[in-house]
Image (cartoon, rainbow, N blue to C red; front, side, top):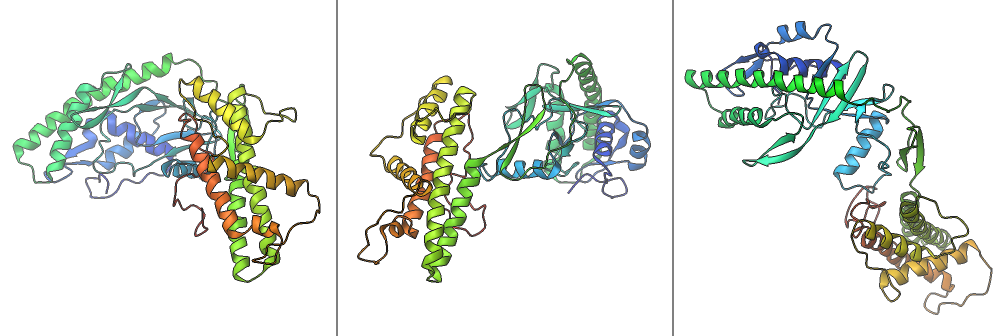
Length: 427
């Protein structure tokens, strides 16, 4: 449900620019809003609105949408969904990605993202208030963060050094009190609401004027224009210190999901009594799970040292993880409890390493026969139960490490019973 026109029609936006133009006029011009006695008590004069957005070029606006850039709309949507559900199901974004616009937006790749319908009932699109504002200037568009949300009388409001929103938010809350009643207003109540709106628009003018000054005084933006890269779910955008785009592949996620797919194929093969395929899928489940842990270890070393480890770093993956995570935690005045031998997680992950190495540097040596199955001991090492335990401990191990590194998101899904791969079992 949204605020309607005086003709009881929805306001339709033909483009992101038109949305911003409309939102600006709705915050600038009091006479666009007409009072009515029934909820939501105000409606939009669309004829006046359409006339006033014509030739509108330079203006600030507190939009209901947020401006993102450097990525395609598809990738921005995917990253936002991943954030909403806790992350780890895709590569996410790098610390240098600058996906949320700060300063001038990438002219070749920017998206106005609405998380709720613009003009939705319960919001206050007639108030020039927010923690971000957008400035449209000819063919360029800017976004600035100007404050943080605080809570006053159990309602959120922005707190900013750029402008004092206190009175404007008090008046906003006065309207919300009218709206929450959902009753027919008396003439006296309508008169009081009219006075409230009159004062809101006086303050809107001051708020918008302060944003114009802030934009004019802002330092020049160094953001560059480039086409949005084509990303898979395993890719993340990063930028060089000069602001040029690069793609970083999240190998830990890729290897983890490959291990899960191999585990699923292993189970399917066993249901068909296909021991040939089961052995193959079991081996590559182990290979992929071990590769996931090694990728995580190398990434933590990079985060610690800003340098990728090379062949001269002969530490085992769990040693890299312990030492890098300990250093990263100390750097933020935190602490890190090491993974140690004797811990089931440590011992299982170290066994993964040994098995993986035996497969990658294979020697066709003789193996014992398991009396219960009459198969080789290798088949037992990569059985369904064994692979389930490997994968469980990969997830628990990553959860253990990253739960102690609050500044860094886990590279894979670590929550139990999270579904992001359909019906595939995630131990």
